[in-house]
Image (tube, rainbow, N blue to C red; front, side, top):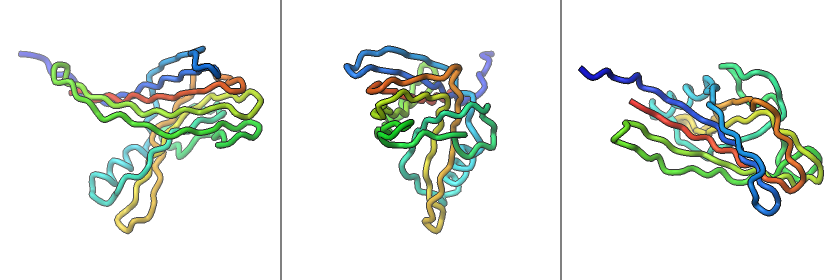
Length: 172
């Protein structure tokens, strides 16, 4: 008899830095270890039919605390803008989920770029993600669903672009 695999959900985090000419100067990939309880809360709200999903949001920060299951946001989120210590936040982009019936897996990617237009260096050490829902009374509810600490901080020079990619994979 064929042994069944355990169902699983995984996420991987990839960070890519490009210079002002678009040349890749750094690429790192790591397993995301930090789905937080907000992920389950968002699923519950969606599954019970009381939610309507709104725009997702990947964010970056400079915090160094180890993520915990009860995190509700980054330790120190980097602001959106061109001022000292800020990054210009691009738009979130999601791919349509794709299934592979040969391997019984499915995946999707979620990405966002951050440009250093501040004129000085900006250091990123943590990444996270929010999704927005509305409850049954159409009240907005934001759920923090992922929080990852980078293995080592990444310093962006002026005009460099950091692209963060979460790849979420399921299997049966």
